Every structure is written in structure tokens, then in C-alpha cells.
View (cartoon, rainbow, N blue to C red):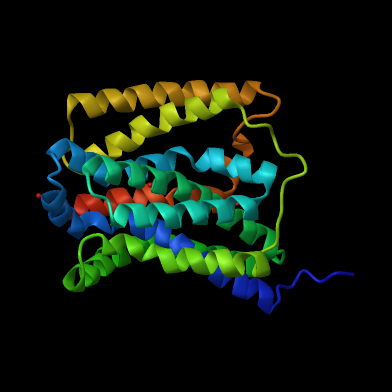
Length: 289
């Protein structure tokens, strides 16, 4: 009978998964200190600065559900490694961006790539750790890495800015993603859900249309308690969220299985990126199975 106890290989695999998980969170906060300097160098307008700062978190939150479903269908390790490749490439593009538009595009790509990394790491932990106590420990490590980004991001950004140019803050991710691409195929198992649902494009569009206005409202709430446009965006997001939920309940193969929301580990983990970012920005102000 095969043992459910994790071996050294699984724990080594967890270490490989922990670093990109931390980097995805760090990238939300790493620009807090670099933004004034890069804005001056790139001559970015105030609107462009907002997009540079926020587009990453918007797309990270918006594509989490979609990327999780895609990993179920085509393989979680495959999506993880594809996300790592895109994240590393986009980090280099962001580091050497010569215009605000290029930096915004790079940050947008980083958001989508980060969304590919996050659910894949958590799903692979569920595959690698079968014993409940060990799985709880592994998920605790995963959650701690996500939560640590709020503290480590500005600190790492400050250290890099003290010695290098503003683009260096993005290069922090490159060696980590390279390590994941080298060790991932060796230490991480490939796994896909035999009963994976088809990717419903209508639900993908609805999920983005519901999530992005809500994330926008939370971002604006960190700057000012209430303004008409963010309040309207929140109302639109809530309405579209209701439409999304009703669509998921009516589909034989929904994009999001709403029964997951009863899983405490799942709801706690998926609440960390957006919640921790909002809390940090409010404090600093004048994104499993």
C-alpha cells in the first residue's frame, strides 16, 4: 500500500513553490518606493503612474479563477512553468522599459503570469501532500509567503534602489523564476483533474468584469474613503458578480465550483492577495483544493 507521507522530494518541491509564491506577492508592493524615481525618468503622467502601480494587482486578481481552471484542464505544472517563463520575461521587459506604455504592458503581463503561478502552486501542494497534517503545514507555508510580500516588497525595493537603478526591483524575480524552471520538472509532479470543466469564455469575461471594478474600488478606498466613480464601479462589480454566480449555478460545467467556497483553506488563501494589499496601502497612504 502506497504511503501518504510526504518525502524529502515533496518538501524540496514545497521550497521551490514557496519562492515564486513570495515573489508574486512582493511584486504587488515593490513599486511603492521606486514609483517616484521611475516616473521622473520615464516622464510618466499621473494617470500613467496609476496604471503602472495598479494594473498588476487588477489582472492578478482578475485571472486567478481562469488560470486555476486552465491548470485543471491542461496540467498544473505546465501552467506553473508557463507562468514562470512569462513572469521572468516580463520582469526583464519591465526593468528595461523605456516608456510608460512599455512598463504598463510589462506590468499587465506580470499580473496575468502571477495569476498562472498562484493557483497552480496551491493546487500542486494539494497533490504532493496527501496527509492532512502535512498538507496543513504546507498550506501554512504557502500562506505565510503570500502574507510576507507586504513587508518584504518595500524593504527589498528600498535595498535595490539604494544601490541600483529603479528597474532593478523587477529583476529580483528573474533568478527565482529561472530556479523554478530548472527544478520544477524534477521535483514537481504533473497533475490534471480528470473531471476538469471546459473553459467557458462567457464566464471568464464575467469574472473579469465583476472582479476588476471591485479591485479598483478597494484601491481607490485606500486613497480616499468615498468618491462617486469608485462607488459606481463597486456597484457594477457586485451586480456582475451576482450574474456570474447565477451563471455558475446554471452551467453543467461551471468555471468556478461554488462548493469550494465552503473550504476554509481555499477561502482564506484566495483572500490574502487583495486583502493584504488593501490593508498595507491604507496604512501607507497621506491582489486549495
